[in-house]
Length: 65
Image (cartoon, rainbow, N blue to C red):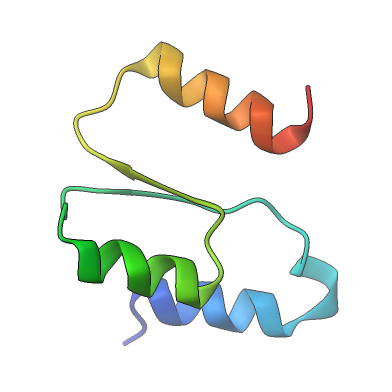
């Protein structure tokens, strides 16, 4: 079994995915969960429920659009 944090770490180890924008969307709102996500390599951590328009704006920001 692999959790999301481990998946992100594995992706970041692969040069093909080192610049891939990664957004964690989670129900967990604890600072330790957010910190773990960023340490794993996530670019953004969003807590559910989230506003769809805000999510789209965040994606655009990460893609530089």
